[in-house]
Structures are given as structure tokens and as C-alpha cells.
Length: 187
Image 1 (cartoon, rainbow, N blue to C red):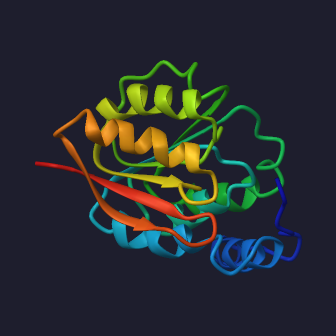
Image 2 (image 1 turned 90 degrees about the vertical axis):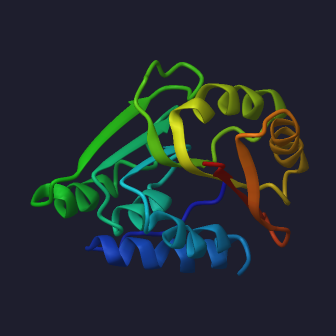
């Protein structure tokens, strides 16, 4: 996994901007398209969960929406720790709760529901299927999957889920670069 250089960033806004620019440089322009679109979905959300935090780039973009609750899950926060003080400073004076789980997304035991779920962790078919089983019942509005074009087995797991439920529908599928897919819960 390629990393973005955040050393010049001092604010959350700079982190968010550098995330999109940096991922465009280390991969290609299309790679961070999901991050360009994510704020559109977060506008009507109050809570956010992400599976796969890595350096905290998607977390910084989500935090700019000032939701009430954020949950970050990653098997290790080593790549996130250098950016963490910037994120902490941003939420210090706001009424924002952040919960972090440093473990496999399959090992987290929670009954907390969130409006939005970003799935960008282990891009293996069996892992994706388990994440869908665990977190779909805990998601109230949107699920965004990254890498559904670049790693086809991710999209296979998403499609199998969609074919097995009438509670969710695909509302966006971006099939360029790494790609992404967004599901919406049917009300």
C-alpha cells in the first residue's frame, strides 16, 4: 500500500486536501474519487464508521462534516498516529465523539449503529462477506465500498449481498481506477 506524505500538513483541512492530491499522485487521478464523493453522502448523516483507517485520510475528510459520532477500525494505527494530533486538535472544542478499535474489523464487538459505513480494509472476498454480515445490520443509511473496480472480488461480495436482500440497493457504481460502490438502505 502506497502512503501519502502529510509532513507539511498542520490543519484537518490540509490533511483532507493532501489526501486527495497525494492519492492522485501515488496512484492515479481516479483513485481517490470515492473521497471526492463521500461528503455528498455524509451531509444527511450524524454518525460514521470506517473499516480500514490506514493514514487517516478518509477520516479527515469525514471529520470535516462535523458529525456527532465517528468510529475508526483498523488492525493497526501505526500509519495513522503521525496525523492523529491534527485530528484530535480539530475535535477538541467540538461535540464530536471518536471511538477507535485497533483490531481486525471482524473482531470488534459493538451494537452501535451508524448512518454511514466506509469499507476499505482487507480486500479479500471472504473478509468482505463477513464485514457485510457484521456491519450491514449496524448501518442505517449508506455503505460505501472502495476498490470495487480495481479488486473485482470486492464487487462480487457486494453483488452477492445485494442479490440476497431487499433492504439495500446500489445507488452508485464508479467503474474507473480503483472504483467504488455506494449502497443505500431502502426505507
